[in-house]
Image (cartoon, rainbow, N blue to C red; front, side, top):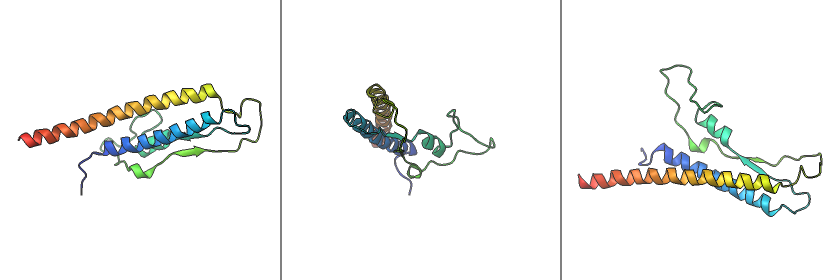
Length: 137
């Protein structure tokens, strides 16, 4: 059975969930800025998202033939990758949480999440318009 919601809403929802997870990781890094031997963590998913959408590194759809249609996106087919690698070398200040970098990541993530909420809001407004016009007909 086809869903009333288009694929975009599912994709945006999945990415918003990962943005929220990233925000929690960044918050944890900031909270542990003074913790001795704490190694900052990172959550990345952009490359996997592009691969799942069939996009190349430049963000363009890659096709082998003009007649081919892009594959259907499966939001369950990818997820975030946690960066928890052990960094054996110890250089003063390099292996610690850099508050400036974390605050920049925090601001970037917040802007991306806000943009996604606007996309989701517009999608639901469009559905609402279709429903309202259907009631009038």
